[in-house]
Amino acid sequence: ATASMRSDPARDPRQFGLALRQRRRELGLTQSQVAERAGVRTATVSAVENGDPGTKLSTAFALLVALDLEVVARRRTTAELTTGPAGP
Image 1 (tube, rainbow, N blue to C red):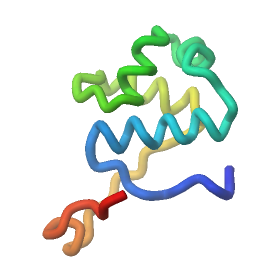
Image 2 (cartoon, rainbow, N blue to C red):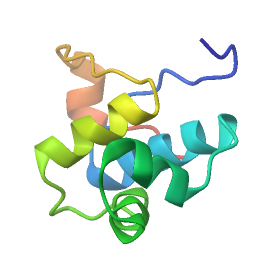
Image 3 (cartoon, helix red, strand yellow):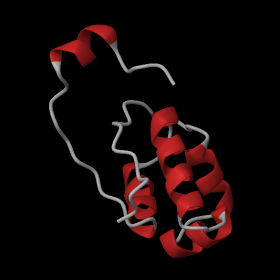
Image 4 (cartoon, rainbow, N blue to C red):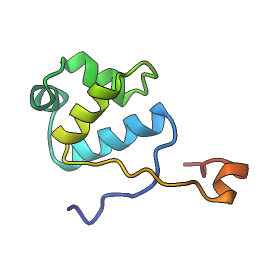
């Protein structure tokens, strides 16, 4: 586990893509290397990192595995439901 890995929730495709890009860079991997590990095209990695809302769930999970990440589903807090995600 990387100490700098953020645990901010990803609530939309853009945030998901940013989290994957951050992890890929932490690991020192290129998009091509991640694509090879995940069994997808480099263009797919790029699209997901750029927030493509049409990403298949199977592709998302393949990328998570390739980057040694996991999904945690939890209920949003009341504040998150009423105010939405915090700004960057």
